[in-house]
Image (cartoon, rainbow, N blue to C red; front, top):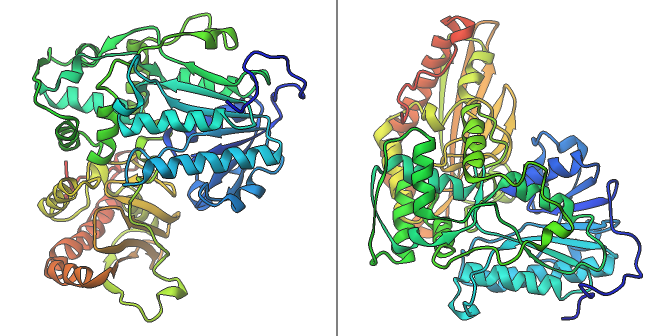
Length: 524
């Protein structure tokens, strides 16, 4: 190991403390978005690194942090990002997608470690994965093997690194919790793979965040990994049964069978839960082996709270309360999935001369622009898409079968959107409150697609709804796709425009306290 000693004396400056500048990578993700707030509360200054800083602008803490545009794959872009930074929180994971993801993750970690050393950074904090005992690296899933390799790269660098290794993270909106929740709620009788009997030591997201913040101030000589977990060791089967009991569901019947491979299991999870197959597979593969903490050395530096670490029931209670009160600050879908379509806005000059298909619809609305906007911003999720429900449902199922996200991601908040939010199989790319909502498609498509929804005033009590679907085809398949689905646009997009106008007028007539979407044409 090339890094500083884990036990030897330190000759460096004191460990960073409150007031130090922290760089958070992965701030658009589930943990990163929550960690930023916790660091600010603890008195740290925060800078967020992102390839697209615009996605952070609507975060509740956006006006209290710096943002910098940089890419971990580009070492040159990291110099400015790390200027003056004392602590780096490394929270970037590719979730095991793509043929070269292990190499990509290793390169990113190496670039960060080298840039941090050049910048004089004093501490790196990395959230890794809890590894099974006695399992050779070759036998690990690619997901776990890559997490371990990244930790080794960071700890072997010149900057002291604390690698916090966690298994299942329980919290409102986490992928692990959503998988557990939906499997239990939707399947009263389950034929399950053997991994449901594997022992796991889950940890509440609140405790993960507490460890991440506290690790910022670890002494200089600490350069090692720490296993972190909650107070209970449970099988996945026990977690499902306890969740059902806590949620007031009838007792679930769980029948393990030996024939479901991780690949088949990920298809099964992808069909039953909102978690798509590409994300479900690394989660499932992580459950094949027992993942239980081998030590609790972190307590030497970060003592357990007086009331102890949160147990399973407490973590579930807090998560369900957040969901019920619509206070889920980040979700697993906060981060764009690797491989999701992305591209410039359809109004950029670079589109000049390229193929660009459009479907534009307008409708006069017998309601104010404010009432129309309320319907526009509430679209998707439980409220549906105000159009032919079967067509939307079928498109969502086809996307799931192709390995995409489908419609089940829903919304983070039932009434409010912000840039970067996932919205079923769309992503909020732009929002101008009261005027414009632009969504970028993240379904599997032979091209790039957007959907723009506008609310335009047309007098004090009237408005105009303008809807624009934009598609940029990729190759012949893209052109064929557009012309294949074009005959259905009058039903899907035409019906959507009419129903949104109708719903806005209905809300305009309703008493103020009862203005809620009526699920017209929705996917209830």
